[in-house]
Amino acid sequence: MSVKPRKPGRKAGDAHAEFLDGLLDSTRLVIYLKDLDGRYLYVNRRYELLSGAPRAVILGKRDHDLFPKAVADLFREQDALVVSNRKALEFEETIPLPGGVLSFITEKFPLLDEKGAVYATGGFCTEITAQKKRAEEELFKIRSLESLGFLAGGIAHDFNNHVTGIMGNLDLLGREAELAGDAREMLDDAVKICAKAGALAHQLRTFADGGTPVRRVFALGPLLRGAPRLVLQGSRVRDEVDAPRGLWAVHADETQISQVLGNLLVNAREAMPAGGTVSIRAENHVLAEPTADLKPGRYVRITVRDDGPGIPAAILSRIFDPYFSSKERGSGLGLSIVHSVVRRHGGHVWAESVAGRGALFTFLLPAADGKPPRRAGKRRPRP
Ligand SMILES: Nc1ncnc2c1ncn2[C@@H]1O[C@H](COP(=O)(O)OP(=O)(O)OP(=O)(O)O)[C@@H](O)[C@H]1O
Ligand SMILES: [Mg+2]
Image 1 (tube, rainbow, N blue to C red):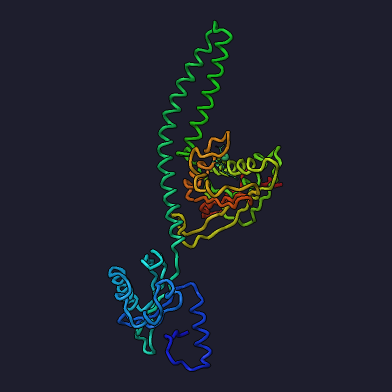
Image 2: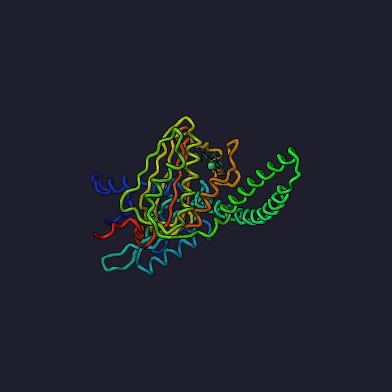
């Protein structure tokens, strides 16, 4: 399809051109054509809107008449590349415009005449400002959680050594026969508190380094079907699990992934004390674009959704922070462990929520290359 610049005095009844104009002016894409000198031959309505100038002013002008020199120089360099390569190329651009600084993914392409000579260049620009901002915030979050993990790991290690020292001494003290009733009670309390402190150090270390993951290739289905039984038993929360056949296997630490699921399910249970439903779904997912610093490729996507009160927007950006809790008795480590375990497995986790409509946690785990080995012991012996 050839796209002709709008010509003044076009014959009435040129329905095809009218149709094209309508199409080009309705899209959110910014579209333009320039001649080889860089003079604008065509811009669509979106271009007018974002540049703040009417078409009549832009046509015939060059980038250097419209943009700061550095930006215009870059545009001209890109045009030259498209002309010399004689094919479409993609660029990411950040451009100061009257409405603010906007980012675009732009496909620039050459227009060829019948003899194959380039006579113009054009561009289709997709605005990505909001996505870029979200991706930058996500990366910032990942980096901050990583450095927190590093700090927490160091503290937890020393803390655990001290707790072990105190425990040893309390143990020796407990063997003293002549310890009187009150003193023994106090000693028992001290032992209990030490045990709690030890458990806390253990949790902190799971957040910080998770212990060395013991990875193997396994199918997620049985783990996803088994987890709710452990956590939801005795509660009024019902579960629905959908893990289809043909789900790709993962190469992961089964215990750690169980813990991820367990922590998400405990939160769902705690969010719905009067009962409700938690749905777990898994599906194969091909990531086409790098997302939250994950490489494109094959992943298994797991979602855990509840129909509790949801997570207020004001705290949504903090729920993965260690020690962030809105619960009276929460330690605030559950989700930070989820985040760090998933990241250590080369995946990522997101939370979404609409107040009053429940919470949704989504995590991606890289798919393993092969199939999971059959579990030993399940094969029937030959007759
Ligand atoms: N399913 C959910 N529904 C509503 N809020 C949630 C949900 N999951 C997490 N949250 C919010 O995120 C906060 C942090 O969760 P996280 O699991 O890290 O800590 P916690 O549950 O408070 O304590 P811990 O898990 O250490 O016992 C919670 O206190 C709660 O405010
Ligand atoms: Mg929790």
